[in-house]
Image: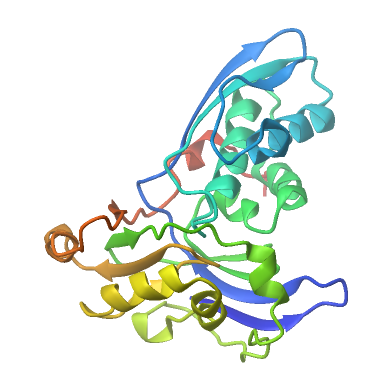
Length: 268
């Protein structure tokens, strides 16, 4: 679910969105350096090292903690750039969590959450580590228990520019805020979808094909689209019927982020 409920004076959009973790993502490897240098040591198509959120996260934590340690970072991309799956945000959060541990910075989850928000509105949920309803610009998180599910995710051959979607004058910006205690499929939907599908025809084509099997949605600002299934076999049955050349993957929904226990919570 992604609802746009308003817009702040500074241009940031106010949202209500449900975010779930899945067992499919990028891989990050870290090697601690004692010379203070932070470097991504491999090339990544479509992600310049200077713009890499993982590199930015490492430098932000280094400055905040005042540590003299550095890190070599290797990023293996599985998630598509511009896919709306939170890949860059997840990578940034993973970097904060991992280097907080490896550098023995000792930051609590609350301190990491404050740094995460400086990197982007989608980063805090990955540091918090629980499936959640995110509100505001993404910084207000309410944990949600979500039912077991498998997801078929299609990856159209397009990279969506999120800023372009949020700048579109036809974007719906006045959805009513709703109260959510237990999320159900009846509450699903994405206010960005009409704008994305009009601007990116391949997204519309993939979404139309997936909806032949049942309810399906654009994820985030796109380009990826997805459908949820109660069983892996049902997802694979639909995926087996995909047209030749269509790209995608199947992922299982998780109850929590795999690294959640690596960060200590604030002392109550």
